[in-house]
Length: 419
Ligand code: C2E
Ligand code: SIN
Ligand code: SIN
Ligand code: FE
Image 1 (cartoon, rainbow, N blue to C red):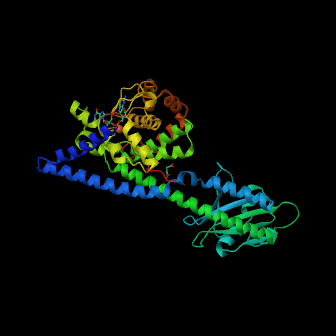
Image 2 (tube, rainbow, N blue to C red):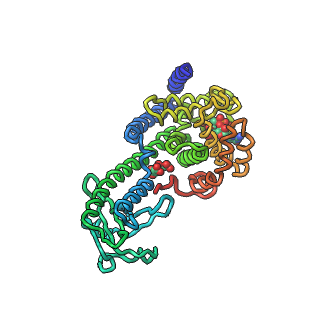
Image 3 (cartoon, rainbow, N blue to C red):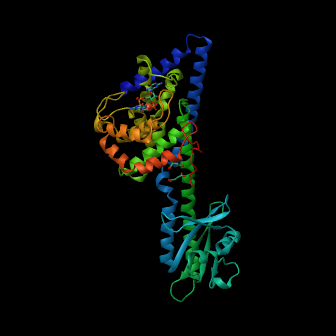
């Protein structure tokens, strides 16, 4: 391992040196290009490590949906209410949104209507005993849901800057009594508690999203131009996540592999563009150069401080190893190859096969699946191939939705918007 690292470090320097001399214009252009690439790479890598320092817990903390459901259940029990809802402000769309249960559709209401809208406007708690007698009440939701609201107790959620970021409301106190002063105090406490966790979750989600975009930029800084890099990276991330989920890995691990997988080919930055972009087959010496990209990649990504970067380096180093031991750079076999690399390898090859490269046309989905199945136990871990077969509909859906500009036949926007 150590030997490989030393060797690859020396090699990277050597590549740079060889490209630097002899000093004719062509060579100079290449060096400048490589230096610029390395500069950009370092810029994005620094940025990423700062983001990751803040965002380490992001994967487990960002699950807003789950969090909201827990808060709502708590409120219903404590306040003896028939229903409870946390609405969050969407400033851009000027609406309040909520999810009633995990996996259900988001509901949206206008930000300036109804009791909840009024709480957003004034920032004050409201305790309405008979809502149908209150002109602020918006009966539209009852009409849609068929639910009959009698009483509403609603309190604002505020962020640290004291801006209103949402509304916590409980409906229809059970039994005959109305929500009283004590209930108002309790809901105010619950709303404060909710504000804290919601704000944290939103911040972490933001950091995760930024880290994700940074990773795509970092990986894209290698700029191999034979295909639509950005779309390829998005898809490999999604395929890897789907496979990991199918294989039963925990959510946090799944989130990590989705972030780590797009960096697998970052070491191609150390391989001359003329080889990367060669339209036809590589000659033996070019192939020898190409086979070094896993070593370069692990060299660039290694970072013992950070779990995600360790996984990235492991994937970069091992994504061309094969289950039967005939891969490179080390010819590892079976379960010696880290599982994250066995997963990312199938994801990468699936995408390489279904898209056009400078050296090959795109294969159809049918041909691709046939190749992957025929490589079970040879190139790929049979367990990963079985997982691929199980979750194939999800994989095909990603393929359909995340097309890049250069990928036949219908171009559409990439990357996709989250939420
Ligand atoms: P890549 O284009 O991203 O391809 C990744 C992997 O997908 C390949 O790893 C291989 O396992 C699989 N793959 C791609 N095309 C085919 C195919 O037509 N048939 C089959 N069965 N598998 C395919 P591999 O072979 O280790 O190559 C690593 C990288 O080396 C490739 O990344 C590409 O950048 C480059 N490369 C490989 N062969 C050629 C070539 O003939 N010409 C050029 N210009 N580059 C090549
Ligand atoms: C993901 O689907 O988790 C990656 C996208 C993102 O975090 O924004
Ligand atoms: C997540 O699903 O964990 C967050 C997605 C995002 O960052 O947009
Ligand atoms: Fe590769």
